[in-house]
Length: 267
Image (cartoon, rainbow, N blue to C red; front, side):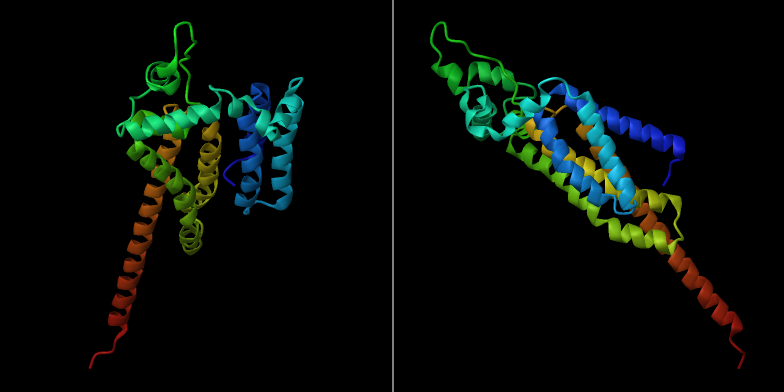
């Protein structure tokens, strides 16, 4: 809506490159996130024609298929082999790491300290405490953003973190009807149309982060904080649009009342 033909082609290229990059990483978590979020994106873009949405999804899948390295699909197929996955069976698999992370969270209400999860694994974890001479103890990342936030900054920080994710996903989505009404009443002003579209796309970005952050340690990477900043900006714009609409309503009411007074015959 806000872009010309060149910009749309550029976006299509970026989409293909992004999905190709996901394939090149070989990450199963990224693939799960893509599969989970693609249908949501198709539904969220209901202001775009079905044919264009199908093209969008096709470009993404083509980028994934073309860039997939040898053995990629065999690796992806192991997702369904849960009982044999090292993440379930190994001491340093994601399941056992998460259990230890919950333990740090419960025994340290303020957390073990920012970026101290690997140190906690090396010093106070059950594995470290039970280790004997010659036993290997690893300093390993949590591989789960929720475990990372809760273990390193405490349960209250985890609640705040999750509340921001909920606000970004459902809070932004909930303003769409009001934003649509404001845009319709004003004749489609740019700032109101922008808020309406942002309230459609940003929740998808928040949901994508919510899903994929389960597989990575991204508590301190810029992505989350950029999303929160964008959410704050969109909500601020929406509040300003509401104020502007109310001012226009009051001004229109005052003008109408003055016209009635001027047109009233003298007694």
